[in-house]
Image (cartoon, rainbow over all chains, first blue to last red; front, side):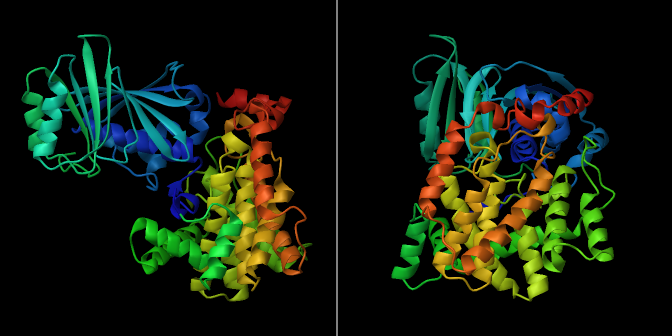
Length: 224
Length: 288
């Protein structure tokens, strides 16, 4: 906590959790996508569904998908902007019982065919948690450059990924591992102190046993 | 931050011959590893954003639910055309708090202070004091650090979230922060600042968060007006030398325990109190 969590943030109203947090979830999903989004399905859960309309939650989520920050005065016009930019939107409801009451499932399709499914939670104030990516646990805040590596659950993959980072001089701030079951799909979440260069991510994707690499950068990607 | 209670802020200030606000600014500079002047300018930007949240007011705006909009303008018109009960200064604070809180409901840009739902209290008090009483902007920024310090302690030892502590944690906190700010502006001692905040908080203990249709509108907007008034009232009591019988940090402890004991239906869940009145249910139904 710092004083600008108390006096701040500057944001478009009305709610830090239902509006500002929703923008941040959308923006995180956009960064994870890494390419222009052409189709977005937004499934709202819990309080996001029940009170989202009056809080502008759908507009805020879309604003984030378009790359806006919580203080962007165009948030109320995000639907029109999405239309102009060729982003198709579809809204619905989902019951994410095990998740925070303010949750959304985003199913995104990129211009180059990439498909990404993200579950984001707005956990209070305007803080968020990216709870799931492509059906596997993730749980990161978006405060650090974050590498999400989906791999098959076999020995040696973690060593490969961490040595690639260490060769690059990248320090790991936090690391979590999840798997569906022994020998099945697994995921590692690595929050880093430095940004991971694009060619290292490409190199990771080429590795044997690595199925998908998703990267959350603190910087805005140029190609978007 | 190097303090965990209001008293510790005062102790630090006294032992190092600093003002209350300087302790807050200095500790923030240390934790962010930047110069104190950078922190000061960052806070000035917050104040500018607050002032913008006032000047952008559009009397024709309506919230997406249709429940809010236009009331700040009504108050402004009333002040201009009538002999008000509260006098010019307080009337201006009232209408300003209303305007900012309405703008928040209408998806305009505001500064959460400490939350979006309570965003009208501090800007109303500080901007009207700057204009009407001629305080230099630097002094107002200092007063914002006073508010931030009080807010930090409330967040640390109680809560600033309606979902955790009810409305006492939102409007109550904003009001306590504003009371401390005003007391500082008016030349109060550090003890006056603490007791102003404490008296303001005590007046708001137990306040529930039961908004209609779960939206930050009813009763939140009008409560910003009440919170701003309560800040001025409490500051004046403290400046007159009146003290809270229960010491400041103990009152914050009481606020935390009240928040814990408060039923969940009255903590931003829309399942109790005002939110389940017959009219509220009809409104909620019409919006779904």
